[in-house]
View 1 (cartoon, rainbow, N blue to C red):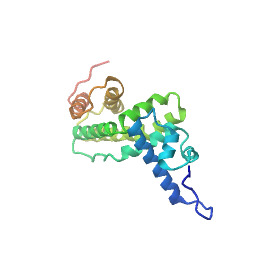
View 2: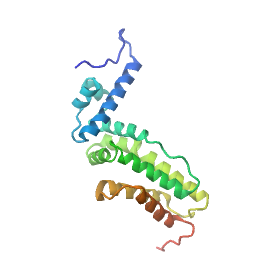
View 3: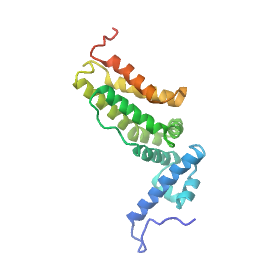
Length: 207
């Protein structure tokens, strides 16, 4: 197979062609994930679809899982993130709805489930996941809760980090374990229930 070159006719590096190859590989990965699923995807198949050699893929990604992670994140970026709302409940619901929209797109939840299953055996993938996936999602939700505390909607002693765990944990429990619906009715109930425990009028149970 003829590989798309990374250099120009004079042998000098050609950034435009490298970017073209990069886009072709990510797009091919996304297409094959939709068509075949995570487990059936191969580097050989991606190389054939993208019109590049396998060595180009391995030059930029150390493993199949690392390539899939980038394809997943690229797909996530296509789902428009919510704007800041005027209440904590609206903020939290919007962020939960955005997360569900990401997870229910064609290369969303099923692909993420496959990646999660590989984390324990792939240290580099786990590091990338912790760096590129977890922080952005946590920080947006944490910021929404902090704004709520500043407005007085959330009590001062509330554990916001734990609240983020509870909100995201419920979503991923349904995605990875229970199989219960991820829909607007669920995100509405989840936001209301968690925020009730954080509200300034709630009396926490003593130790």
